[in-house]
Length: 68
Image (tube, rainbow, N blue to C red):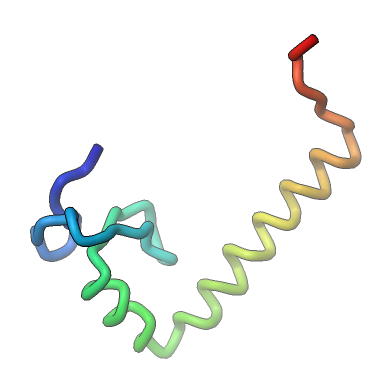
């Protein structure tokens, strides 16, 4: 598990989250800075649409648990 922010190097013991722009594990302070970016809303929409696309594919192809 990550112990420091990929962006600023601060300790992550107070919280962590994944960036909306890449796979960086960032601290909450960096997340606040990220939210202020002019393209943040677009990144959130893109991420949400990708998530929904994967859910629809899962439903369409009926992936089931292998548990019996």
